[in-house]
Length: 460
Ligand SMILES: Cc1cc2nc3c(=O)[nH]c(=O)nc-3n(C[C@H](O)[C@H](O)[C@H](O)COP(=O)(O)OP(=O)(O)OC[C@H]3O[C@@H](n4cnc5c(N)ncnc54)[C@H](O)[C@@H]3O)c2cc1C
Image (cartoon, rainbow, N blue to C red):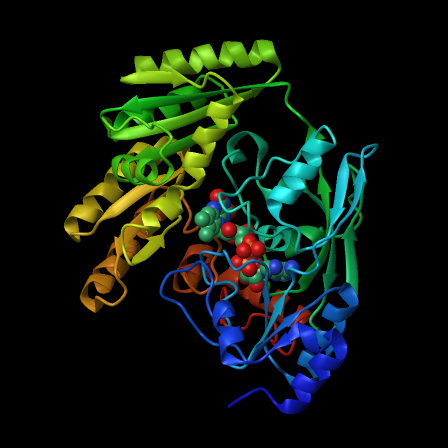
């Protein structure tokens, strides 16, 4: 069954011929996202260029009960922008204008298809700072970041996307356009609808404008790499740094497998003679940075670090950060299928969780590279596997179940930043409980009574 020709004709009338794709070869790139082993051809792909386009497309979809899957760059890791058969994929990448930088109020107004890096670069060009920096920031869109409430390497000190969203323009499933939030630092008028749409994974509305908070740029920064002969020592170092009441902007972790893959891929001179590596960064006032860096180095040595190397200049610091950002791509080169997970625990439980992941890998005879935002307790155990090997994929699934169960048992969560989508859907009901699930379902029914936005995602 295909989308009715009358619907395609309506979509062409709204967004123009050039913005509607229907041929198989044009649809294939939109039939999957960054999540392994998931693919589904959509009915068509529509590129919106304005809020009016989005609104009119949703009106047609709502009237004809046609499912709509909103899509940014498709880098999501939980299948959020995976199409449904015969759905409209509504792609926002052409809505890519930076509409305003307000230096008096420290805000930036952007369209949803602007990439995260463009936002960060524009803030820097104006002497300001936009901290959220997901590993995918060179291509991910701000619409996708808001819809997933994405985190990044600086989440420990600066928080996640939610902490920088002051306002949103959202098109509701029936096509009505709504504004929520404003430039006020304080605003308690009514429910915080803005917060409802952040992290809603394309299920409640289509985000068409984002008003972002910017902050002053830190005056100084210092980047260090500490190596360890045991993972436990790296985990203990993270706990000891936090216990010493130092909040670095970055505390990232790579295990042996990941270090070797990254070095092979990025050739930045990472030390290869260790089991674990911490990338540590502190920023702020120069005097505070110097003091914190010295203290972090001392704590790392005290907890058994083999070597602490301080980046000698900005270029080396940038190379090290780039190396960490390339962890997923580097691991993806060594096996046909790379399944990256998102288990997150309170920081005090990190060492236990890392050990548990290692034991699960041994138990199920699987290859895992683990890296992640260690300062946030957010680990990315990454299975290097082959989706064509059904027996091995079964072991991967069983291993995941054990990892998530342990994360929850330790007081953690089933996803720290990648969202539920389809990948974690089966884990959500038990995790949130009956009452919360009912409220979520009812909220969704009120906003989208015909169930056209991303149906089957997050929960049924
Ligand atoms: C190499 C790599 C590294 C990554 N690193 C990180 C990381 O460090 N931290 C992190 O949090 N994530 C990370 N991710 C995951 C992913 O990049 C983020 O979830 C990102 O925010 C998705 O943006 P996108 O534009 O690709 O959105 P998509 O994948 O296209 O969409 C993601 C979800 O958002 C919805 N959506 C998209 N645009 C809109 C809109 N305008 N309105 C409403 N809903 C919308 C979609 O329906 C879907 O449910 C990484 C992914 C990769 C491949």
